[in-house]
Image (cartoon, rainbow, N blue to C red):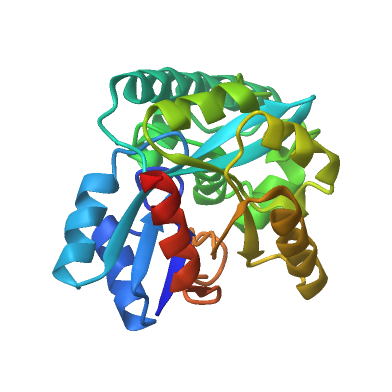
Length: 271
């Protein structure tokens, strides 16, 4: 029995509907799936229903963009009450931040002579948590870039001419929010940051787990984070970070977390 605990749908920057994602999960033999869309839990109800139809266990989740000591990180919140009042209020606030950022980035791109509109981006996004991939798709659709990767490489990555910083929660604030909603806080894909020194302060702030198994983690990275998880008494999680067809091919199924790790997460919530 295996789980994939890092998945996205078109409720943020994925291309699959919840129903399509659950269907892919069934095809690759997953026993459990978590939806971790960016700054939103809006797709969780549909994903839960789609998983139930396929006899797949559903784990509610969300991916938060946070800051720790000047470093941008992603935290995964799991097993939260997705109707928790303050959680929903904070997520609504950061969805507005995302929409404002779209307007700012489009304005910068227009200044470079790239003619796209915020309305086009919002129409492509068709969700409350728009992001850079939606701007990238608009650039491709307008013929300014051939691929989404090219759009990011030329314009949308940090330091590129279309990039705009985003207001975000501190890591400690996000961890507190996740705990208030009854969930577990996990650092996502730590191998991508190359800043392992941020982990002990996160542990002090209440971090519950580390995403050790991840698509872009090498074997040595995975071993390192398994060791850190044991050293700090943290839970171990894993997932593919599938965004549908955004990145050339679906990633779902390429990371299969043994179910025993999810069982430990559920026990920790009940403790």
